[in-house]
Amino acid sequence: MNPGGPVEEIGSTARSVIHVLESQPLSLAMILTNIALLVFLFYSQNQFYGQRQELSKAFLDSEREVRDILSRCLVPGRGGRLEPLKPVEPIEEPQKRSEVEVAPLKPVQ
Image 1 (cartoon, one colour):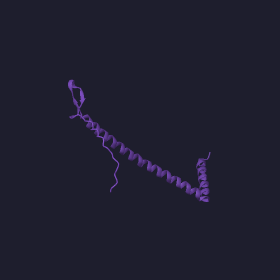
Image 2: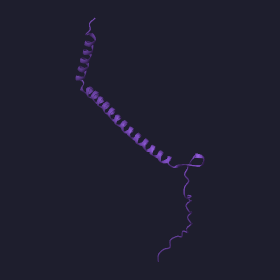
Image 3: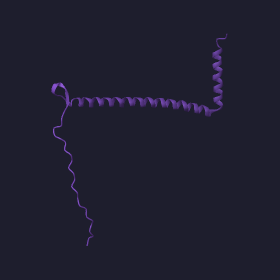
Image 4: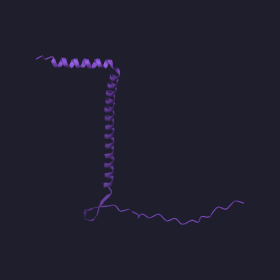
């Protein structure tokens, strides 16, 4: 058995592919364009993932801050239970508007 057999076969296949691509430069250009597109997509997805991670972290930090603020709004009540704070003044409903009479405009004389 010849140990150089598979290596020689791969080499001859590579030479034949290069020979075919030399005769059709448009195919070579299309292959290079596809490779460039794959590299660009990989790069853009990595950037998008990093930005999404930063936004998620900012969102979670904001939620944590809101949760801390809301936790301060509870005071101990009777029996050690936590009860929400009651508003100092009752909220009043807005007053209803009075009806206004509408009269047609009179011509100027």
